[in-house]
Image 1 (tube, rainbow, N blue to C red):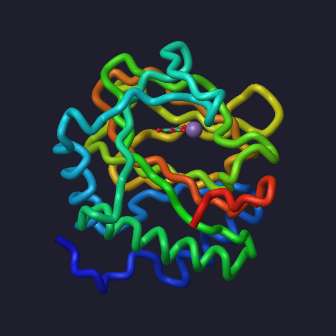
Image 2 (cartoon, rainbow, N blue to C red; image 1 turned 180 degrees about the vertical axis):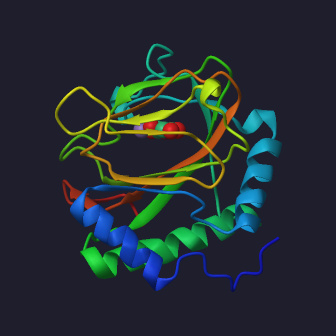
Length: 217
Ligand code: OGA
Ligand code: MN
């Protein structure tokens, strides 16, 4: 277990992330977090009780649906009640504040779930946020799989805003962290040939809709 004083993101690494987001809109970082935190998160994800996993859905509110044609993973939302998940939230809080300071993104909070893809699961090409319809600004994915091989499939393909060819193919290897602007980059998860564990999160802005604060704080 990690002592709480360990800082996962120092100023130099947040500078690097902010520069990349400003210039390209995404960044891929191998071994972004300490080995201890990665091990704890992997262990936590692997040992979550079966009943805590849900079929993932697509869309929000009235448009929410479960559709295996689009995605076939299972998810489990994380919370600060668990010490490992809380350590991860703490690291993300450092990142959120650091990015706000550098890029004036106005990131308000962070939500995150474990994702588990069984053999044969995938997630078809999609955007995490539609322009003006979501408070998700920055998507984050952290992979938690040891010794991922090319033959295991399950790569993340990142596409440009316009055009058909992927700009990045990312293996879901332990510690690889991907950040991208949620409204800008379509992406997909190719069919996985083995169990594939990750954390997916979104830094959100605080939209005000019809005089209601969304999300509520
Ligand atoms: C998602 C997603 C990609 C991945 O959960 O929205 O696109 O590589 N995940 O797990
Ligand atoms: Mn996505």
